[in-house]
Image (tube, rainbow, N blue to C red; front, side, top):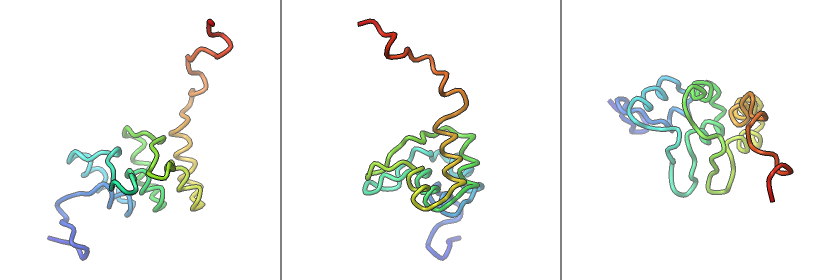
Length: 119
């Protein structure tokens, strides 16, 4: 069976899930081997996280919190997903992405302070 736009309902698509804020389709797409690191096209370099951020897909991003993804991935114009959310005024999306970018304890990293390095 096909949808009005020609998509086959039996084949989940992680990018349609991101556009439509569809957690069920996200789950199905992941189970079919799709990834939050997939690239939509070579022109934009959007990941599903970029697409969800642009479409204000909060439920999709909340579900993605349980999955591995890099919130620091840049698109072809060097924009992060949080940049798109900020430009569009999606505060809830910004908050969620910021928490993914800086998880609790991030400032307790074991990196040696610059002034403690041997020279």
